[in-house]
Image 1 (tube, one colour):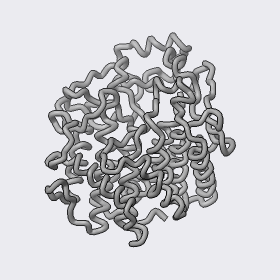
Image 2 (image 1 turned 90 degrees about the vertical axis):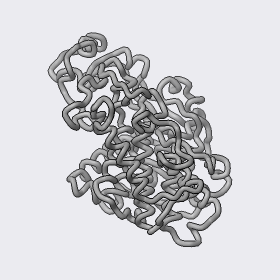
Image 3 (image 1 turned 120 degrees about the horizontal axis):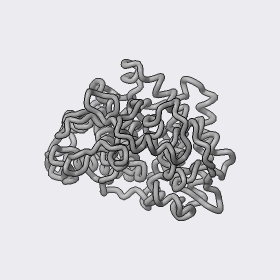
Image 4 (image 1 turned 180 degrees about the vertical axis):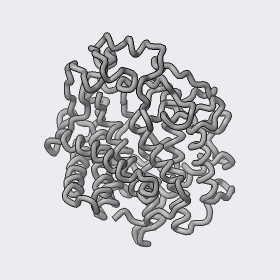
Length: 417
C-alpha cells in the first residue's frame, strides 16, 4: 500500500529535522541519506500531482492488500489508484502534501534550485486546491476511514500555510494563519498531541520560530503570539513536574496516548520539546512559565532525553523499540519485506507461511520504529501483533528528528532561507 496522507507527513517532518539539525546529521554521516530518503518521497509526490486540482492519494486496495502476505517487489495483485479532485475534495491530504513540498523546497534550495522551485510550485498549487475546494477526504472517500481516517482539515491548512510562509516569506500566508483561519482552526490555548492526523502542536512550535527569531513587527502580532502561548502550554504539559503536566504517561514516565502505535506520540512530543529547548537557547530565552512554575530549556531537553532513552531500551522490558539498535530489539517485525526470504517464490496467500513462521525475520528492518508498549509497559514480539510490532515511516521521521536534536546541545538556525 501507498498511503499518501501519512507519507506526506513523513516528508514534512523529515524536512523539518534536516532544516533544524542538518549539521548534526552531517556530523554522524547521515545528512545525505536523509536528503536521499526525502527526495525518494517528494519525487513520488510530484508524480502523484499531475495537474493543479488532482492528487493521487493512495495506490492499492487496503482490504485486498491486507489479505495477502508477499514481498512488495514481487506482488502481482491489482493496484487501483485513488485521487482527490474538485468533485471529491481532500483538503487535509492536499494541504499536508503542500506542507511536504514547501518544507522540502527549503531543504533542496541550496542543493538543487531547479528542483526546489518545482517543489514550491507544486506546494502553492496544492495549497490553493486544498483551501479553495474544502472537504475532508474521509467524507469524499469513506473507504479511507478504516486506515488513515482524518479528524479534520483545519490543522493541515494552518500547517501548510506556515510552511509556505517560511518557504516564501509571502505575507499572505502569515495573514492566513493569524487571521480568520487561525481563529477558526488554531484552538489557541488548548494543547494537542502532534501526529500524522493532528498538526496543531507542530504548527504552534513552527510559528513560534517567528516569535523567537522574527522581525519585531511580524513576531509581535497578537494572534501570532497566541501560537507561541499555546506552544508554551504544550511544553508545560510535557514537563513531568509542571503544575499542568499531562497524566497521559506510563508508570515509567513514557507519554502514552494511544494503544495502537503508542510510540508515535511520545517521540513526536519529545521532538517538539528538543526543538523548543533549542529555540529558547538560541534566542536567549531563559525560562518557561507554567502556571507559576519556572522551567529552563534544560528541563525540556531532559524530558526529550527521557523519552528517547525509553525507546532505546531504558524501560521495564529492556527492549529497544528501534529495530537494529542494541542487542534486544523486535525480531518478528510486522513487515512483509523483512519476513520473507528474497529468493522465496510467493503469491498472495502462500506467503502466509512466512507470516506464521516461528522463526525470526530473515532480514532486519534497520531504523524501523515499531508501535511500542501497552499502558502497562508490556510488549509482545509477535508478527501477528501489528498493534505493537508494525513500523511506520512517520515513526521513523520523528525519531530521526529527535535523535538528531540530541546529538549535541545546539543553536538552531534562525532562518531556513
